[in-house]
Length: 121
Image (tube, rainbow, N blue to C red):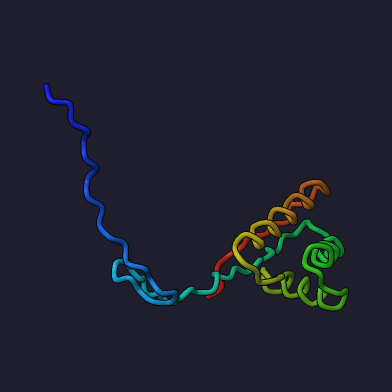
């Protein structure tokens, strides 16, 4: 057996790269602007019934939808006369939360008030 010291593999010479220049081996990705649509809106609608007091509906509209007494009364009258009325327009999650809040308040008070959310057309 021969005793030779193994030689190191040859190393390619490294060229110095000037700052701000491209060494030719990098890949640059082009930035594309994304077109994002605004979130879908949902309207919170209260439905009329013959048992829930008008005053309770006004209080609920004031408390959960931030309306003043006059606006809440107008919405309540629309619900009473037309069978339903829009209390507000929100994103899907906020509308669902508002519906849950109204339904819980009605249930705790023993009223059959119904509230739904539906997409704005």
